[in-house]
Image (tube, rainbow, N blue to C red):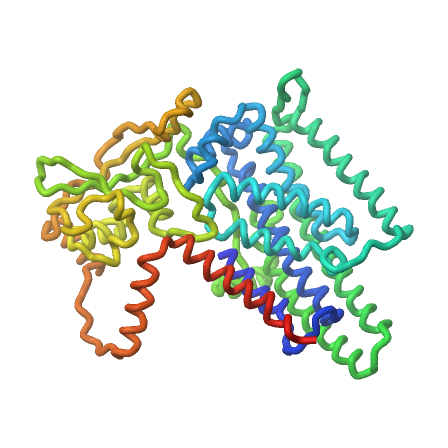
Length: 511
């Protein structure tokens, strides 16, 4: 959903007319459209940070969530094992850094002081790089990094060093004061104590105190955002009126600014609804008309509610579904291996982000549910029993059985996985696991229970009677053949880098 909302905002940020020259000032409305990007980034990070505390999860409140996070995340990376074994006191400090980066620093995205925004940008980039290295969270982190570019300006990329003006010096002083105040607040609110070889930390505020601040703070936050938007629109109008340009350009600039200002106000009030809903007190102040606007835009996913991993799950180990095949109901059973999720305890997991392997992600969530609530899983099983090559292509065919001929039976077994201890770092084993239970019983391709289950949900494959254009079929079959023989992340990065190269070189021949 965050990608859809960001895509909607990209329409507003993109120039309406082609032909804007490199180095030009750009449209006056850019101030307003880029403010919307900053506001979206502000809401996303703030909501992600607040929901961890709002959930009341004891692991987030005791600063012990990262003791389990790297082991229980959906798709760990090769560095997740090492991160999991970092000292406990260091993991607590990392959580504090993440809390401050997500809850406090987003407010400075909207502050009209360049040095403050740049410092916030640096802290956020460090956080996102750490997340990318220690976990595979699809495209989310790349999207956040892209949105963070809205905090920069042309001077950051093209500007030459200039003599420090009075306002620049004042801004740097304010920047030092602000982040010095943040450091002072962190030391007190998290009871930081230096103990020789480590730093002790504990949350010094209670859930009641947090709730009291949140109940009033969300309302002030919305007012702060509205004040920032009003200031941006007024600054843009003054920029248009007092800039040295013709009357025609001024007229276009004023009309453009007013139009984007109206759109920004509409989106702002719609965006305020999910933010206000984080607490009953602020939620009760939302006008019905504003909520109606939100509901209509939410259907298009132009405005959304966010909040990732509010509660830490899998504290006793991560549940994993292992699919096993056999030609006899008595066994022996042989495991199917997936490309990106834990399976073989001797296999590490690759870096895969920003590519999002949906099957492996869905297997993670299914492990916390039952197969009756995950009908797609039995549909997958049936297709493996039939031997569908397009389904087998989603699995690790190099380390999976039955790539030539499907098994007669497939069953699902639920295991609990944990990382091996640090003392075994020199060994090839990454995981230890124990069998928990049978996730679903053994099915054959003609099993009445399986057929009835799929038929009741209209999941049985049917032969298509529609005529297919032979040219399109041949083209699509060729594309599938090529993509099936390329590793997904390699294909993703190849297309991405090729696209970036085209963008960067498209105007190189123009003067």
